[in-house]
Length: 540
Image (cartoon, rainbow, N blue to C red; front, side, top):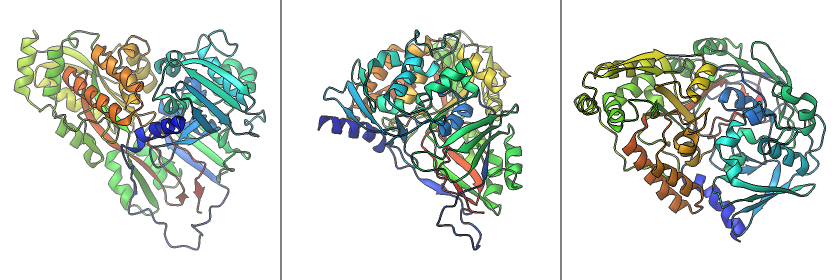
């Protein structure tokens, strides 16, 4: 009974927090035709245009959306996130049992399944997948590669031992109970790869991925286009579409032009200025969902003057959040006051927004020894993300507000991969940043973005390089607590600490919006940045 209760508790952490509504525009209905819209049909090619090319197609190495949105269709994990709402579904594991003390997880695998290369999926294959990230002496562990997410989620501190009990049963022994473990297993970097593929391709596996998901890899073109084909033996049933093409198109306006003209079927990250036209264009529909995300201005606490709380407070007072959200997000964003979105467990409604007050800002700067302000750099992103529709415009507005209190901020906008790499090394001073929750649980915001252990590593996802001890203790307590009511209280306290120490200026939480042609049927948004296409079919 305890095992069942613990499984339900972990799911309840998510289910308590929201009912994610999937809403479509008025153009969702197809024009009248003789096409049967109730019976899915097989065949066709779907072209999905996204921001840019992937960095890697090895799930163990993914650390950003342009890669993981592809690998999520090639690979599967032991468990997976449920489409349309916040919950977990069985994946390659058909079931699992949690021990009375919460430290042993026994997974029972589906039998008779194969990878895309025809080799069997069994407990030994799963074991190799974990060991290649965990064990530096494992033959498939590549010392030159950064298993960044394995490190960032402290899996060496979570997993004590892994045992293969039989061909279809694998067991994980943890050091201590962990409320986040199942959700971690649903993340992109936990996708199970073919050991035979690892052996065959070695370090080139990143560009020759072999998984067991609904689509198998065909090719990766020089322009970053990735072509996938339906996997006939996928255990949930063959995908309806024959071919899935993931095409990088850097400019959002160009993506919209291509969608409008029928050159592509779906697109990522529309720009705000195009939404109204999309809503009124015949043949186009939009799916909207509350995003599990946050955008923010990180202040690098490891550098002067941002190590001084008074300076950070001054910056928060100096920025007109309402104007910033209104002009950058419009109706598609809401101002943020906590580091987690409102739909998550532990969101603190009692927190009040720091008001826009330039007089208070100048007073704090003077108290900190900067009566005439100072010069700094303000990093931003050139590409559109779910959490940030226009990074350059946001930077310009923030630059104007800071200038009004004497802070001269030079805007720096590296290319996306360079931005991630250099920010991860802490080169920035101020940085517009954001996060889409890998899993719908507060830990997956607080820990990667605000824990001191992450700040002490490079590359780091803690863009503020914030090292608060009280925050660290709350984060650890939250992940070791399985009772959802107690966890909620812990994270509400963490929101209080965040707003007292202000490593960020929190900007907004935004809607996830996916525009597509109206003949694209069966697509479902996930609460995270996951985009899966195995249920999609084309009514044309």
